[in-house]
Amino acid sequence: MKNILYKILFILPAILLVLPAMAQPSAPPATPIDGGLSLLLAAGGVYGIKKIRDLRKSE
Image 1 (spheres, rainbow, N blue to C red):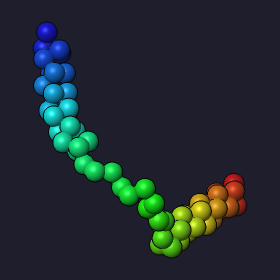
Image 2 (image 1 turned 135 degrees about the horizontal axis):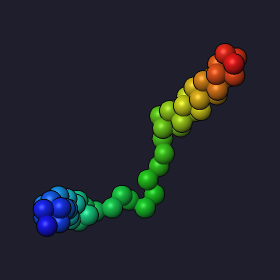
Image 3 (image 1 turned 30 degrees about the horizontal axis):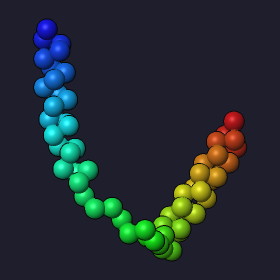
Image 4 (image 1 turned 180 degrees about the vertical axis):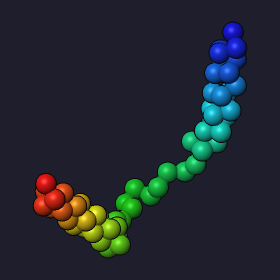
C-alpha cells in the first residue's frame, strides 16, 4: 500500500508540472539553423574522430 502511495505522490506533481509546459506556443514553421549550430556539430564530429583515433593508437 505504501508503494502505491509513493508512486501516486511522485507521479501527480510531475503531471501537474508538465501540463502548463505543454501549453506553450510552438516554434515558427521556418526556424533557421544558423552557422553557430553548424560549427558546433562539425567540432563535435572532429572531436569524436580524434577520440576514436587516440583510442585505436593506444591499443
